[in-house]
Structures are given as C-alpha cells and as structure tokens.
Image 1 (cartoon, rainbow, N blue to C red):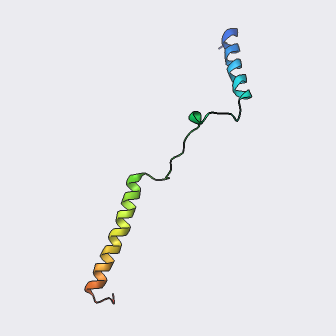
Image 2 (cartoon, helix red, strand yellow):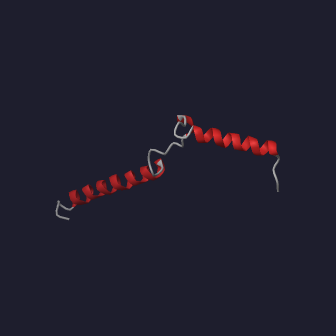
Image 3 (tube, rainbow, N blue to C red):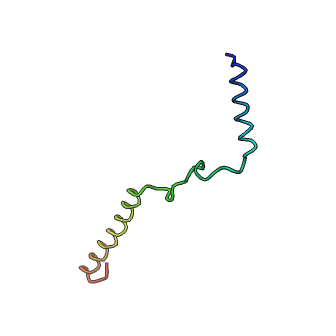
Length: 68
C-alpha cells in the first residue's frame, strides 16, 4: 500500500516539527497521573474496616474487663 507524495510530506513535516519541539511540551498535553493509586471507594472501604475493627476491639475489651 503506497502513500501519495503529498501525504508522505505532510506526515514528515509533522514529525519534524515534533522533533524540534522535544522537551517543550505544554502542560495540557502531558498525561496527568492520579493522586492516589487506589480509588476513593477502595480507600473508604479500607478506612471503614480499620476503624470498625478498632471500635469492636474497644467494646470487646470493655465488656471483658480489659483482659481479653
């Protein structure tokens, strides 16, 4: 499959323009990374489990006299 000369020149010019601008990419074109590696739902579930288990442990130790 051959490309026309005009299309090949257009692609080449676009490539050359990008080569000369290397390192000077505007902020809007850069991919932004997420602030957290996990989603807010997973983080909320984790906090719920940790806080809930600590509350249950406090109740358990209070009802058994503190020597569980």
